[in-house]
Amino acid sequence: MPAAVDVRDSDSDVAEIVGVVELVDSADEDDVAEVNSPNSPPLSFHGYRRGRKLGQGGSSQVFVCSKAGCQVGFAVKAVNLRRLRMSPDVERELKKLEREVDILKDLPVHPNIVRLVDTFQEGYWFLMVLELIGGGDLFTVLTSRSPTRFQDREAAYVGNQLVLGLAFLHGKGVVHRDLKLENVMVASQRRAYANGPVLYNVKITDFGLSRFLDPSMAAACSTVGTQPYCAPEVLGEGSHSFGADLWCLGVLLFVLIAGHFPYSDLPTDQLELNRIVQRSTATEA
Image 1: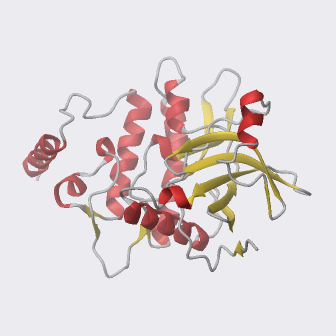
Image 2 (image 1 turned 90 degrees about the vertical axis):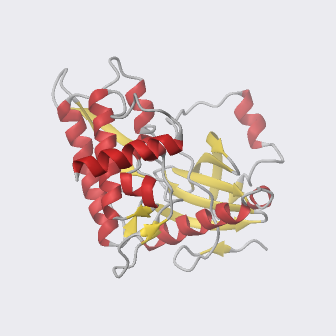
């Protein structure tokens, strides 16, 4: 009989969080076919009912789900453990799964961090119930605008929330290691005044690369993250401290305001980029 997994005791593995795209209420024929597919996770589990598919990536899929008696909806991230274990990089993927659950289950509720509601295992499906964030990710929001940039006040409003979110994480000993536009979800939005700047309320998500950093450690040593956002010490030495998260935040805010990366004219080759950043850092020092 499938057992519920309490989020406070779970050592289960969960894959990289798939960004939840903008919520669409209506379902079409493809959605109905997906619900009945044998390759899909269970339609009902522990009082929840799976609905429209929101996205997928790797071994995981994300659906809207509802629960009887609850006025709010949820997102369920369903990880196919059987498929995951067939991955050529299975150990790394399982570690990301485990790390994500361990971090989210231990974090208290914060307005700028995505909330893990519950976890379950049904056969070879691992199910993460998360709060539903229906506004899409910040990258999608930015690229849908014309011109492709935020006003200063809009970027400052987002930046302030991300500073609060990172301060909360760092205070709990968590370094995110992959802060980028795609990993910031828009929970809601409003205009400051008629025809004024749009103020986006945001939450940090995707903790697959995150880790706890012991106070006695200066940094976590591994080269992870998304290249255009990586701090020089990450590219050069694989050393990722709390400060590297702040570098990522700086790059993110630059992109919001300018509409492009600060190093957009640099080569894409990883080794050459490393050399350029290291030379630049040495010159500044």
